[in-house]
Length: 370
Ligand code: F6R
Image (cartoon, rainbow, N blue to C red; front, top):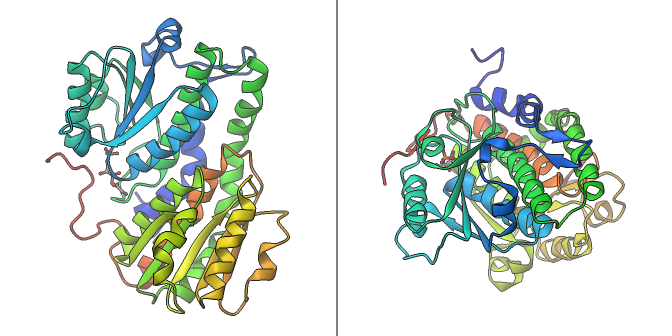
């Protein structure tokens, strides 16, 4: 059942090109420059009249929500709030019928997320569940759904369920943007094109697996890791840190890179590898600054960047640092492609440390208690 892979986690990481294709099936309309999502059960007029979107989730799905905030605010120009299910339910949230609540839950059974959904619905909010399990509680309790169709995820650490949540959020952001007139069909089409190419790009990233295995071999004995990203890649840094913690039991922290100087910089010494996510975006120069700060304090850098970037390599020491170069992708897709090497890094580090990657200690696949 592991199809020749040593672990479900590895199988599920490698299934991502296929899983993303499944999330996209039947949903892209090049002709109309729009996205088909009839199952959200919320019409364009209602979407146009929304005053706010609230994204609620736990764990890895909460990281998807943080990326979703960037996507929906940038594309649909509507304010987005993100909260943990476990916090939202107890904080007397301000919510009304003009709000759309989107719960993001792979299993559809997470108790805290379900309680948050119920709390929002009690105040009249409209609701959608982004979910990977058909017929689960979240899909039955929300008015509408976006199924991710990633297939069953057996590994306890979420991988393909997360990247397909990100794809679903791009789709939802585009649909809301079209309904509100925030994007024209001509503005949507290049994003649809990028989504169509995404499975192939993820395939290319997966072909870098041997390089990541090599990075894991060099760094697996470290006891702490720091992950840095900016903008949409800051939640991906959080996800990279969570994945590493979950499967390898190494202490890891994710930070928005600009926050490094406000505290975590104190941790940097020769024993702390810093994973920096440096796509070629409008804040690339800022990430170079972070790399210089780490190097100046004797830290090691594991830089994940995109092809065609000439500056980063010159800052690194091939003996002490590592660099992984990914194919260049559409800026809205790079949180997805950059997730993949972080999953592989966590996996290979954990395997080297002899951990049970599919069944990490103390964790369960779905958390149906508070
Ligand atoms: C991390 C992980 C957990 C879940 C969280 C929410 O790898 O699997 O953090 O993401 O428990 O689960 P769902 O998405 O099922 O609500």
